[in-house]
Length: 226
Image (tube, rainbow, N blue to C red; front, side, top):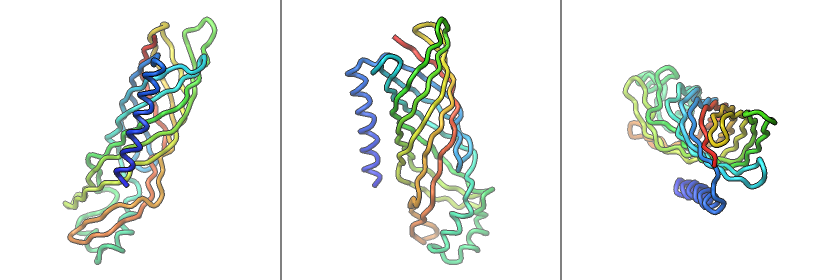
């Protein structure tokens, strides 16, 4: 399934790039901020965007970003309990490797959002301030990462990428060709019954878990218009 997910992500990016090239994209931007998730806490995010007008004050926008350095993994205990169907004497091994919510970390975990949507702007008369709102769909790439416990347990995971939805409210201000912006963005990134391949001390099997990376993202950025 991973190959089909990758193809889908490439297709979204290709469509956005071709559309922007055909319509002569009228702005480029860059941003940084904090991405909050229900399951992993807060992380850092940086990215860029481009957009082109389709109606007065209405544009199509494509975003690409990179988020990492998430703080925590909340429901480790539930995931460990499900391993009992795969690993005999789980309680012994969990105690031996100190596999609890305080000791388990994700190494090299990151999210690569690829998002496409509509943005509508409401400029204030005789004022450099413009409010905007919008939303759309996203494809969230999750590369392989390691699960590490303080006692030495380590496992490499590779899971499917996820489709989601997003909505944003923001404000921007500046001179006609250059503005700064601040925005609050909510992203719905959930996947139920996601399969994890397990390979632990020679025991192999599949762990099924729910993944919820939904939450608010707060961004500051700059946008160049022409």
